[in-house]
Length: 415
Image 1 (cartoon, one colour):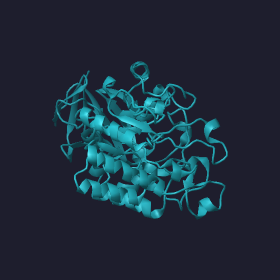
Image 2 (spheres, helix red, strand yellow):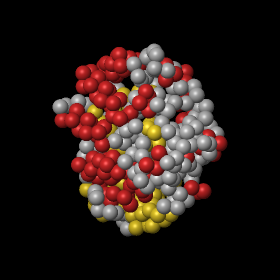
Image 3 (cartoon, one colour):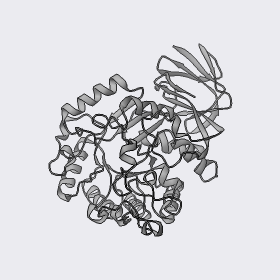
Image 4 (cartoon, helix red, strand yellow):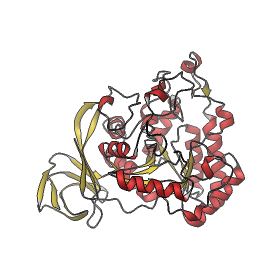
């Protein structure tokens, strides 16, 4: 198939140019004023590398009442994503070769995008015995929501991952300090039934892991960082040469604990923190100390969400709302340029995780998102492609709508 994306503003080689993108089969074959094959008119729209999400839960196998590879990949496509990392906390946990291969088969059969499974650090995420790292040709390792509490085990894991040149992605919590907490310790939390989750529960675990990562020289990645103190630590360890990267989520960018309600759709892990933490996350995006954006897409069925506040499931869906929320908060407001946001959602993820070059240049796969930056719309959870719609953002007004998503030359979503 030969076609031309004509008339758009294209983000290529670190600048935005008004140029046509010519695609043949799955490749970008020309960037010029020429037109070849079928013409897709994108005049006035922005054409960028499709988004990459390093932190997604698609729940399959084991929890398909909340999401499946099919519905999750369609949600990703609708949000402009063509590549996502899948967290291994499924049932069974992705910690055996059999489970890993079975998941790859489901992805091959049902996914419209590229899904890259992460493998657990410890068998069944129990924190007792390390997996056989050599058995997996995966994008990285993570125990996700069950952080490895045994420091020696984490040290051995990081040594091995350094040897294999694989990253360790860590959900950082000291579970003793969490102490079954659910919401950030705040006035609103104190006036509710929600148990407090201290901000130091994250920072102490980040500190421990950074010491180990600096010793082993492993690529250590902090998932969904949410506190100022954690980011201060990351900045310091970067300054002394530690191979550390970090991600933040749209919800920690646009919310603080004074804005939220103590209800299940505002319950996430890590919790929405204080104004100082939100400001630090935004400043980290501006100054470059935050490396990338992840959604931590965490779908849950109504039955799992609509429970008493301390027993309802943690997490919200994010793939279909991320760009609009971030563009409106960060770019529309003038805090950062569009190019910076696009890098946070695509180029930087590819660079830090050694993925195939993801830029719009001749010879690369055509994995592209087309965006209408002037399109104002309201988030409507009843129209999500995801199987779940647990979100606090229903009804929010945003700018920046995904118009088309192209994965390896194939149009997989059109608004």
